[in-house]
Length: 393
Image 1 (tube, one colour):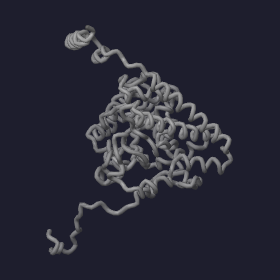
Image 2: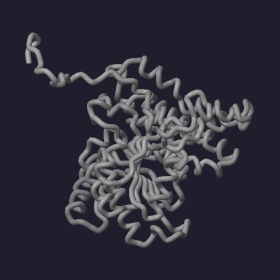
Image 3: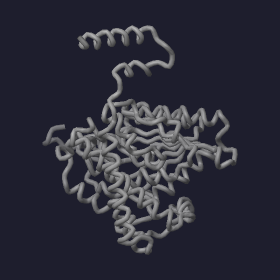
Image 4: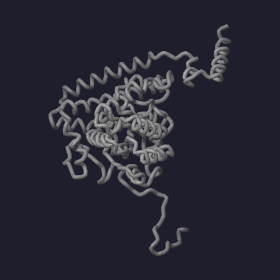
């Protein structure tokens, strides 16, 4: 239609421009317990099912959540600094997403299995993976840096969305092993699969929803909607919020304030309990924001405005939890100072571990391609060894 043409009466004008919206507003469906200024919100009929999971948190638990947030942010900052100093090839920052990850990670039981993407440093922390072990792959000295079975935390997955299918397959196996719905809290197991809003556009993500639904798999899909899939905003990825995607597959979807660690924790516990009890999958959308770049190779100033970042700074998850606990008298300046000292010590430990990581022997690149001996790999390994020997003379 040209500029001088008039649309038929009753027709809806079309436009390729996204509608104006406040991207910091999670809407009335969003589960939230802490306002941006740290004020504790009243429990409503909508949030009541989740609020019960906060009742058994004592002051030590609350301080523990804030400590997690502070230390996880420092781990992330150290990873960023190490990359800038040439010690890492790449680092994907979680800045701004600490509450979404710590809340989910602390909701998991030891036997629950997590399938991360590549930004879930906070979940790794909660699952007991030493933070220095996260650096090996980004330094290029190993294929992951930890044994997944030690902490029930899978290796990072770089292929976007691929881990969602892995998670559903594992959850189906858990169900077939009889570790769901037994009533034994030390046996019943759930699986949690993490991705970003960009991951919801991948075929693997949608296929995983199909398999989870039809098998009633004990899996929780955890979408961290940080509003940017590299340089693409939400309106280039979907037309309805990710949590509503669950409706089409026949299981519940919940949007939670991903900058509110209490809400992230409570909703995650609720969904994990459903999965362990044999009630099937849940999709959680953690409504949050990626304050930094997609990775250290990205420049977000090329595609987003500073006013957007400033608006989200006012919703910072650490400031929010700190204000709440200060108001209750649970933490004071002395506690915060001690925690900052702990963070400094952790950063020094990570830095030293990174800088002293040994380079692996070159032949190791052939060692773990197949579980069993493989003639082609053996020939390639020998050819490489002969090539290396040429330099010895």
